Amino acid sequence: MSNLICCDIAVIGAGAAGIAAAVAAAEPGLKVIVVEKYGFTGGLATSAMVGTICGLYYRSEENIQTPKFAVQGFARKFSKAVMINSHTHPASFAKGLHFIPYQPNVLHQQAALELNKTDVQLILHASLVGLKIKEGRVDELMLNAIDSVFSIKAKAVVDCSGNAQVAMLADLDMIKQPQYQSGAFVFRVIGLPIMEPSVLSLNLIRWIKYGIEQGDLDSKCERLSIVPGTVNNESGLLKLGMEECFMADKVRLSEYELEMRSLSMKIIKFLSKLDPLLKKLSISSMATQVGIRTGPRHEGISLLEEEHVLSCTKPDDGVAIGAWPIEYWGKGRKPEMSYFKVNDYYLIPAGALVSKHLKNLFFGGRTISATERAIASARVIGTCLGTGYAAGGLAAEFVREGDWKIALEKIRTKQVFAEAA
Image 1 (cartoon, rainbow, N blue to C red):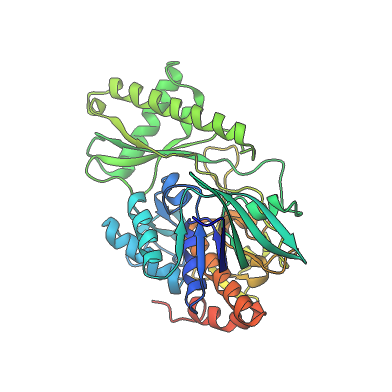
Image 2: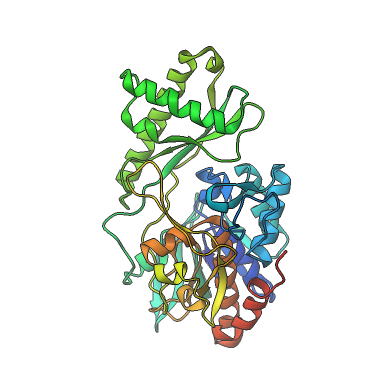
């Protein structure tokens, strides 16, 4: 690999937002490079085994069997492909919410397939470690790969890293909190007893509560739940929520992961001995990392706020649809939900995807310019696909014409004004 690679647009991160950004940026024929620290695509949707794509559908007054898509364009197309190849169908949740259950390995494969359809260059096992700023722009990105150190010189950068790496390395002002929403650890089990998912869920709560009362399980285990829509053929995803809010610190993250793995194994060992129905229960796979819901975010020229979400604000520069309620995970066993009107949505402004500090920096996914409560809605996979695609489109027009605003009409046509079905 050459020590210096030149391209039109560099995308940091190959998660849901990064894949969408790369696809959009490559559509005009620009040279796009995606760098990913893992050896696979999909980001947390793969590594944390999230298991559900939320934010795709309108919330309805009742749990209808065929929900109506709110999002359009790439986000809808990609999610439908993941659903079909996962052999699942839209599932319903409380308060008229709908989502798509998926197999993490399928999402990873679909993400790789989308990149293969384009001329995007994907570089795996590449971590961003530094950058050069020149005349108010990102001039060069420095990366470490397995066997080399190299740099990328790009005309525009789209940060979909999930933790605002570019802002951090550039020492820019960021949107930060002392602590962030609590995360969760997901693992797949086999040997589940055959019963209705709702009954299984209630029994799981009862079994765990008994273990805690008997002193066999830690009280933290009460935050165990079944990932909705994932139980099939005696297999399913279980989610163990963190008891405390997340601290954006690598050491603490490692502690979280070690603790969650240990608790997960203790839970399954206890359950397998508790009841004959559970004697075959075992863990078949674990997420490679804890699912982090929020963290430090970029400062954009606009800020998405809670009131914009709840009042379904639709600004003139809105480029991505938000259709999921505010789902804020604190210290409780369940999230705090704040809903807006049924059959409605809000729009995320382009300014929330454009850096306030660097002319050629854009961003999508969980680190857009938003308050902590607003991102509690916009962080879901369905919305991240939309903000990623929009950020890639804005970056492309900035490279082509020197003005990202020119892209607004095209992006809005594809993601906002397209006919819903």
